[in-house]
Image 1 (cartoon, rainbow over the protein chains, first blue to last red):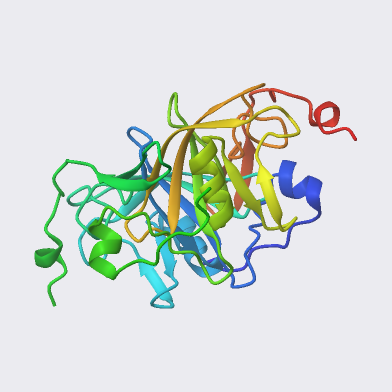
Image 2: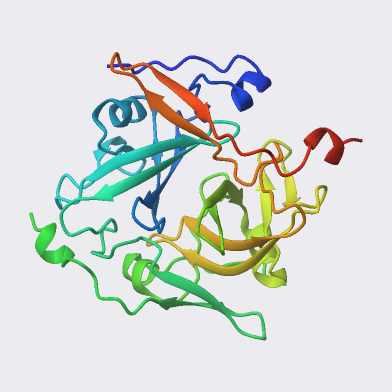
Length: 149
Length: 149
């Protein structure tokens, strides 16, 4: 397994080259944006370190780095909602990764049981106050059942 | 202008409530994911602090925080490619923001002149080596002309 990535060889190569040279932050992470292969809906945002990016590339199953648990996070391992990667893209300065995925199991990505983590829209009133409106779609699984210990 | 956001009032309210209580990181930022209102294509990933999130909410024009320049970044101010926000969503734990935008000007988001910053796909060979394949679409503007001093 490849867990070491090369360093970027200057700005031109970083932005226009063919070498995958992720720019990890000071804490060793890149941002991963995850959309559904079928219709492009944004499912979640997470982080990867070099090891979990390599795991994702090598296995085709999305692995992230959990900042709260400080551990490798094989997404869907508990719930069965594994993410099968169909395409990976990088952005211009290679500090963000875009994964297109097919989701196994319930087809849900959020730990609340919903398909996407982005189930609330910001609504602003004329006075400049903001509130969140939750989508009315029912969750795809019951987290109290799926995550019981 | 509202530049102060409330603190989250516990996990249940954070995840299921109607209060916009962004969880800024230790360096004061949330991740912003930006997609095209028209077809959902991922255009860029950036960061916002409380001030630029408030500016975005209040003006309807996307403002980010530039980590490299350590300054407010009104996206498209130089190139004319302003982003007009049509919808804002937050994720379950409110540390990521999803902006759907219409892009002015050339319709390009990337500083390389391309529509999206994600113009390279990762291709892996059977030996486990990875390389980036650049999309063949021509850039929408010439950065050497647009950003000349």
